Length: 401
Picture 1 (spheres, one colour):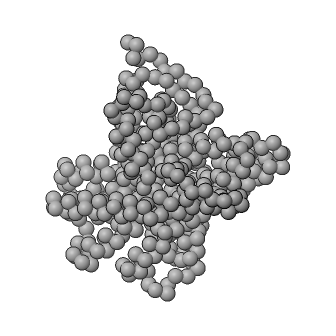
Picture 2 (cartoon, rainbow, N blue to C red; picture 1 turned 120 degrees about the horizontal axis):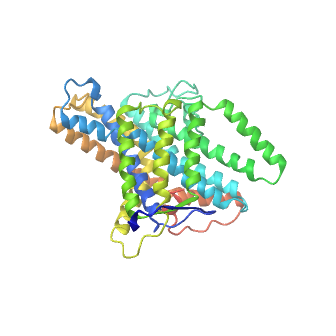
Picture 3 (cartoon, rainbow, N blue to C red; picture 1 turned 90 degrees about the horizontal axis):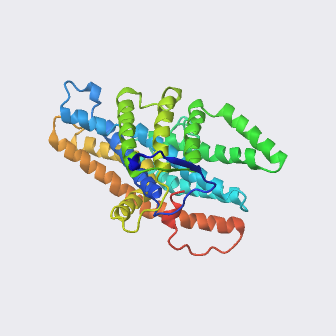
């Protein structure tokens, strides 16, 4: 009965940092897995008919649709991990000189190092597939390929006042992320600034944004804040209790996958997502300890998790433009407008397309996302007017934040 002793909860002023901690390993695995789940779900939705439109669907197709239908939960994990890493990191640095300037550079470089080349590739693919006609790029907010849409999507204005650039509907969540990156430091300044003027300005800006931003973005800021809060909670419990907790967590995810409207992120789904968050985050908090040096699982799991986590952002933002290209090639070159659930070979085509998404995103990562730390370091050197030292082995670690 000793393994079932009550868990011990403690609050910590600093989050546990280190790639050899179990929660860091799990976060890496989940980042890569979540991006893969979203890409697999969108590829299935774009290439296969919807399950409800298929008459008497086979058991395998029902299972396939179920397994590839957890995109909502995957995005939820992204929000929680973002709050844990980004918000938790900022909390740890409060009081340091230039912390907000560094924070702004870190966030902008993290987004734009991937988004700018992805948007450029989206334009090229649009021209190549005929979706974008040469000379049609303008400054109209209604044109999803316009220069205004390009710039606005870099600042999280998609779904606020603009459309998703290039029809890339996965970009909606980046609008949420971008505004959470803005809202959280304002919240921190409101509660920690020594000067009344700074607190007043921060409060006024928060009030203004609360009136301008769409309600779903504001509501799901609570989810992001839960990630921040639990980064400061450490739960000590037995391995048996952790394993036992996985069963109700998996059951809840499966239940909501089958019964909820998983295409929404608004007041209708907020209660469900708060419940899932409060089930997932304690598990993550219970893993804030170092893996044993003798562990045979930690090192290979960390290696695989880090590999896929490194290009998870590239996969997330690039998979839909690549899917649109694959769909165009399948239709124009092979006359294949849709994959059939009754054709086993079509499932092999699906797997091949999924492999293309992974390889294409990884190549994009090598070209662009892997340079995030270098770009960040150069910008900071320019802003702070000091020589830029050559970074050594910090790119992978910085990409987590």
